[in-house]
Length: 287
Image 1 (cartoon, one colour):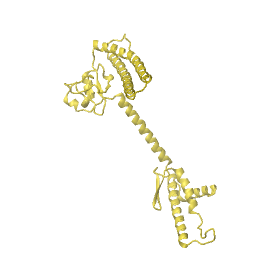
Image 2 (cartoon, one colour):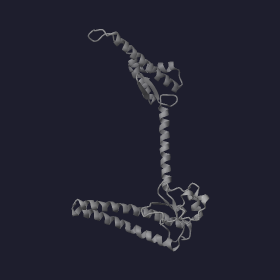
Image 3 (spheres, rainbow, N blue to C red):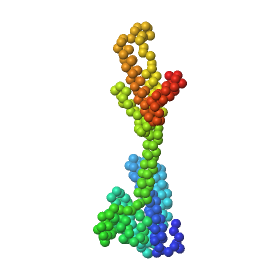
Image 4 (spheres, rainbow, N blue to C red):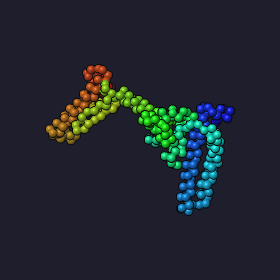
């Protein structure tokens, strides 16, 4: 809230007035939006013959919002009178990727539905400075005397919205970098990449060292299963069946070698050392 004892002619005072006005307009816009939604609900309710009690409840909500809005509008009128009595420069940026900076919200190039960022940091500032910072986004209607070379420069204006977006992006980037770093630290390879390999006609991918060890243990079990030569009833397997089992075991053994080699590289030990460690783990678990 403003201190009415402050000197009206100071830029600090102008910034305070416009900052409070900007916040008030935002609050009023929010209330107006709620009112419009309720009015649409009333039209819908009337169309489908809703009860009088239902429509009354909607109107009661509107009355409550109007009561909330009244002191806000009174304060807006009070602050606008201060400005009217002793006007100062202002700057408004149209919301949107190609929005321009205007000296007021009444520019002929704008509409009743145009939404603005109120650049209160430029209130009571030198107009040349505003134009210089606005650069190519300066409205040539509001600032007809702006030099051509200035209008060709990129804008240096930063809004609270753009700061919030930049902060949000920085946070997302930081989380992404943290996730990537965690993935690399947990990866089963020295490079921090996922381990991919072919197993038959399929391409497998292992993302973490923990999964790689589990996969090795499971695969090692299959790679060392004895070749079954007879069925339960004593009927012998065909040579084709035996050859298939041998081929499958050889395939599983190759997968074990690939995984063990990747894990050895990650920890900077020899293949033999890592293989012995994994075999010991398998024996301990009873595989």
